[in-house]
Image 1: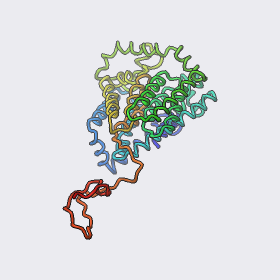
Image 2: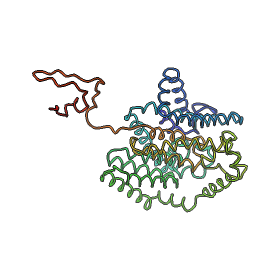
Image 3: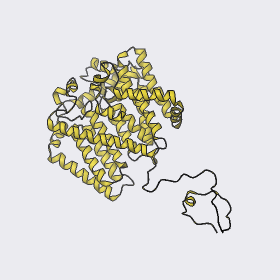
Image 4: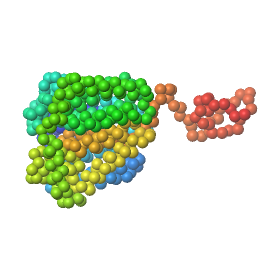
Length: 422
């Protein structure tokens, strides 16, 4: 429910429920859950923290340090943004960690929610692209400065902007690796790459293409799976070059309305002021003021640059660094296939636009896939439920036979799959 709420209701529309200065409704769900759990089952939270204490220590230092910097700076107006993009997502990471503990089917259920919502977003985006305007939240979107120029040309689903939609779909593509059958993989790949094309995100298209290569070459993929991925890629390429989608993206590649120059200028500006923000920042939202004073038309267009100015370089590196570590560890065996890459895609892509430095679902999506990457996963089997054996030696009645010496029974002996030792 929390994930669905973050995706279907953009932050620009949250005031319809929580008022001008409230938090996103989904953030309220997370905060209420954490408060109730802390009062009723604190041992469950403690157990989850005990499973990965160093990770949670770094998260505490980063998020707690950010709130401390913001409090000292006196920028009280940035609290809502911090709750929605930092605190609530980090607490949701804890909630998912508790849900995933020893529960591989729980990982699959959350994965299914993400993939299902990705399909829903693409369907809404395609309908809006055909219609020439978003299907929902048009009045709220119209308050965005960019909406008048390309609001009806670039798909955004129900996200706050096209780049957040591309981020979501780019993170979902690696998760296709955990789908066991070729036909669903084919359908999901075509749908998600189509959505990225509709968003006209160049970064999303690049990252999505790299993820497709991963799906093709990853270890363990069967020949039918590889063939399905290859067919899906060909379908997307055909749509790109022979359909209207390709024309829109190619025009973006040829003329990006100065966005590349703006990003380069942002990095140049930061290179001249970074020494002022090594250990301390100026508070949430300060990067917009610093950028405006330095000549930027919008923002620094990079989450780590914005957090470095807002909270200090040290906190920014800790915050994004811990997610990167979780993502890299999730690439190993014993984790949901594709989850580590999905988290890595997320932590890289958020550095290419304002993402978690502005009110979007980027923070919640990033921490959700990080939770998938952090959890241990055992591939469920199609056979009967696994038997639970007692810890003590199991003694079976023996009739008309010489009683064998008592010994601890293995799992195979309990199932009758071994033979008595003679």
